[in-house]
Length: 577
Image 1: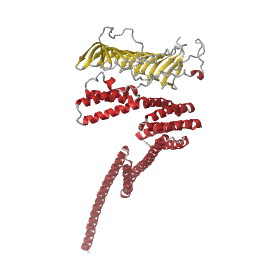
Image 2: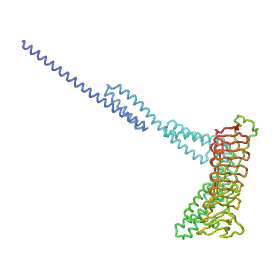
Image 3: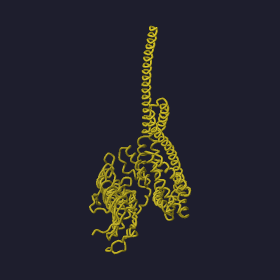
Image 4: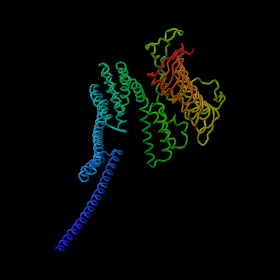
C-alpha cells in the first residue's frame, strides 16, 4: 500500500514539474511575439514620418496637389497604425494632429491658388477689353464699368496670390486705380469736350488712311484739320484728354509737315531705290547701276531735309546705306543734276513764354500761403530740328580763302568754281568759292569732292554755317545763323547743335548747356530777357528732372520738373542773404 502511495505521489510531482516547464515556455514565446510587434510598429511609424517629411518638402516647393496626396496618405496610415499598435496611441495622436493641421493649410493654399489664377485671368481679360474700348473711343461710363471690374479682380489677386504673381497683381491694381481716376475726370468733361474729342479721332483716322493710300493732297488737308481739331480738344477738355491733346497737337503738326514736304520726296526716293534693286538683279551695265545709285542717294539726302521725326531718321539710314555700298564719294554735281530741289519746310521759330516776376517789391518777403506758390508761366524752349544747319553769331575771323576778281573762274554744269581747284582721280580737290545753281555758296576747302577742314556755307535763304567740316558733314565746332535770327555757337554734328553750346534767341533770351540734335537735353541754363532764369535738367527741350527757377528779385522755385511742369515736391526758395 505504501508502495502504491509513493508511486502516486511521484507521478503527481513529475506531472507538476512538466506543467511548470510548459508555462515558462509559453511566456517566453509571448514576450518574443510582443517584441516583434513593437519593432514592426516602430518601423511603421518611421514610414509614416517619412511620408510627412516628403509632404512638407512638396509644400516648400509649392507643389500643393502632391503635398495634399502625401498628407492624405499619411493621415490614413495613422488611423490604421492606431488600430495595429495601441501601445503607440499617444505618439500617433500627436503626429495625426500635426498632419491634419498641415493638410488643412495645403487645402487652403490650393483654394487660394485657384482663386489667384481665376482673378489674374479675369483681370487680364478686363484689361484687354478696356484697351479695346479706348481704341474704339467708347463712352467713359462704359469704360468705368470695365475699370471697376478690373480693379476688383486685381484686388482679389493681391489677396490670394503669392511671390511674383502677388507683385504683378499689386502693380496691375495700381494701374487700374489710376486709369479709373483718369476716366473719372473724363466723366466730368462737358459735351463740347466729348464732341471735339470724337471729331479729332475721326479726322485722325481719315488722315492716316489718306496717307496710306498716297493721296497726298487730301492727307495734307486732313492733317491740317487734325491739328485744328486737337487744338479744340485742348480748349474744351481738362485732365487726361487735355494732356493727350497737347501731345497730339505737336504730333499732328509734324505729320502735316511730312504729308506736304516729305511724302512726295519719299515716294520718288522709294521708286529710285526700287529701280536700283531691279538693276542689281539684272544684267545692267555698271554705268547704269552707278547712275541709279547716285540718284537714289541724292533723293534720300533731300528727304532728310524735307522729313521730320522717324521718316527723317530712316531717310538718313537709307542714304548712308547706299553710300556705304558705293564706297566712293558722291559726285559734287550729283545733287544739282539728280535732285528734285523741292522747297524746304519753313523753320519754326522758337516759341518762348517769358516769365514775369511777382508784382510785390523785391524787399518784401513772399507770403507763406499756398496761393503764392504758383509757379511762373511755363516755358516751351524747344529748338526744332532744322532741315539744314541753321546757326549762331558768325565769328569775325573767318577761315575761308580770300577770293579776288583775278581768281580763275570755272563753270561746270552750272556750278561755278572760283579758286585753286583741280581734278583728283575724277573728283574735285582744292580751295576757293563754289556757287551752286540754286544760289547757295560754299567758301572753303574741297578734298575728293567733299568739304573738309574749315568752311562756310551760305544758303540762299540767309542761313549760314561757319566751322568744321568732316567728309562733307558739318561736324566739329561751328557757328550757325538761323533764318529766324537765332544764333548758335558750339559743338555741331551733321549740321545740328550736338554737345555743349550757346543759343542766343532773337527774342533776347539765351540758353547755355547741352544739346542733342538741336534740342535742349542734359544740364543747361535758360535765361529770359527779363532776367529770370532756369538752371537744371532738360529732356527733349523741356524741363525734366531737378532744377530751379530764379526770378529777378531773387525768389524762385526748386525741385523736380516733369515735361515743363512742377511736380508736388517743388518748393519756394528765398533770396540768399
